[in-house]
Amino acid sequence: MNKQQQQIKARKDWLKIYLEWGSVTKTALRCGIARSTLHRWIKRYKEEGEHGLSDKSKRPKTLSNTKITPEIESLLLDLRKKKRWGAARISIHLLRKGISLSAMTVWRVLSKHKVNPIVKRRRKSDYKRYSKEVPGDRVQLDVTKIRSKAYQFTAIDDCTRMKVIRIYSNKKVESTIHFLSEILNTFYFPIQHIQTDWGTEFFNYSFQYELHEHFIKYRPIKPRSPHLNGKVERTQQTDKSEFWSLLDLSNPKLDLNALAIEWQDFYNKKRPHSSLNGKTPWERLQELERLIPIQPEVTTKFWASEEKIIPRNYAYLNYLKDKNVTLKSKTKKK
Image 1 (cartoon, one colour):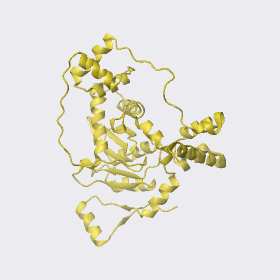
Image 2 (tube, one colour; image 1 turned 120 degrees about the horizontal axis):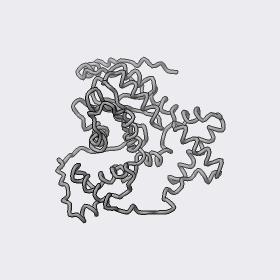
Image 3 (cartoon, rainbow, N blue to C red; image 1 turned 180 degrees about the horizontal axis):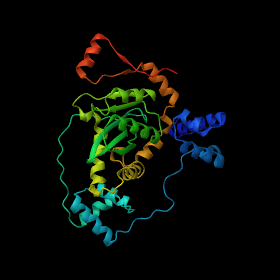
């Protein structure tokens, strides 16, 4: 069975469950997909039958190239001079302004004007990079300061690079728990593991209990090992260089949260991602939707793992392991 056949089979299963239950909300929850996704395939099936469950070509009916006007050329060169951005980043910024130019086209314009290339010196790393194969298998969380009393909480899916960002006035556990609800309302798939550093905003009993209420396993990285949370660290750098750096953050009237959500939607659905071979996180998610487990499967795995609450003191954690002592979750099996 090829990839297309697997996708069609998964969509048939969704429709079968929907016909049995008669509820879009319950079916979407049962299958671990968004209600909008289920609505789309129900509509396609009603209009086109089984043939409508196949993916349609994303190639536009007519192809047109953006004409490079003197104004666009001037904007492009100005971005290079002021921001020291490469062709790919300039291309992404222009896309946000409604100007569609490939990185190669931007590079040709820069070459035409004999702009010197940017020399990047990166330290060689023997760290082996990895990516999970199933959406929601592992979600990395982190927080970074944007300005005084403005902290960006970030969650990124290890597999698809779909992400959620919100702005809070503090880093208290209450903010973290509220952010978790935003993640669950935004992502289109069940979350199996959440990974964070040892910051007290994440690594505390209250947050772990909240995770267990949603059948999510908590996995803190090793102390002083930020590279293990590399995807969320890197995406926050991208946010600062491609988004926040373009705003006047000294302006108190800015609605930072609304702006962050707008940028989040652009990042997820329009911004090409280099680690995804130029695809957007949304496109990657669509490719892998057949692999998304349904919530009951995730819940069963959670109970089977006999998940425990993890103490934050590392020495104490080792002591408990030696003594075979555990702190149990408050969550009761339903």
